[in-house]
Length: 136
Length: 244
Image (cartoon, rainbow over all chains, first blue to last red; front, side):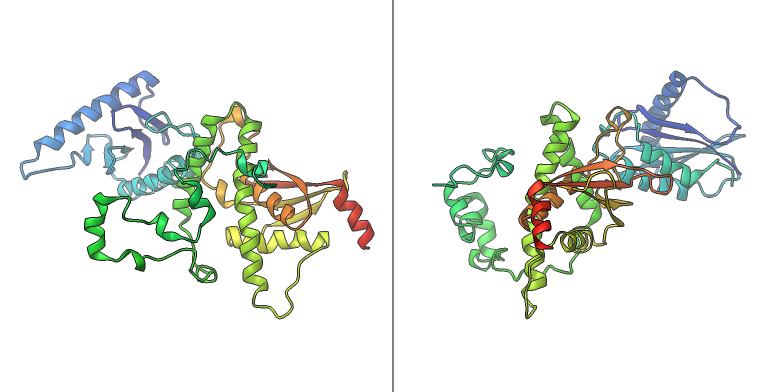
């Protein structure tokens, strides 16, 4: 079981935080990460309209043969995305802890501009203590 | 009108933005002007039916000990303080200016903290007293003021070895900085200047004028460790000598 990467996507579809943990995914350039995040944002918007049973908040888990993508959408439109191995079962609870760290270390920090890339030392420290090296 | 011009400490922040009339200032206990419904006719129709204006709680009539043990949400304060710093940052040109402004805001709180704290402590005692010696005053700040403001005593109090007029109060994890990460290009900034202002006001109010500043002194164990540096004025030390 492993956690590969964490993304935070703002409500406009911009990637504001990206960090890799365990090895297992191809390394990409920062531009490619931005494109992927924007694509995911679009796909997520489409999935929220596709539900056959009425209103939906959009995709929550996307699984492939080699990894699993868990998406947590907040009430304000920020998306937390965790890329994990298929066997990983803690993704949802990790994302909730990440959301809490984001609310504490990012939103309460006067030197952070909302919707802009997160360059907050306190957030990095909190994420390290939550996820560590990504191996569980 | 000896006091027509407010103390420079209190006038740094413009009061022109406050929509209060001079009459409000002269009669702060008259709550009817503040909560008057007559001036807001659009609201009066809905509000008058639910509660009469005369029954509105008046903060000035409330017992001061009522809120002694109640607590304030740390999250709400963190958001408020974050906005204060952001707003202040828009009005200043440099880090020194920002620290001075935060210090001034803290000073306004410190004067009130001292008054309220002493009232709560001494009003019930049979022999109310006032500290006139330096060391008891510093201990009072270290334990009582910190407890009244942050809910816990400070972690250490030290005397400078180099300068006789300098004392330091150390907090390993200041609650107001818990969620603040200062960017690298501003690493000199300590948001605890706000706390320094509170300390300065308390010292001033007790008759120990001093210059108080805040400095980051991180250790590996306590990354947000902060030192509040107190530089006493000469007259305080001279008076201490006489009191011996």
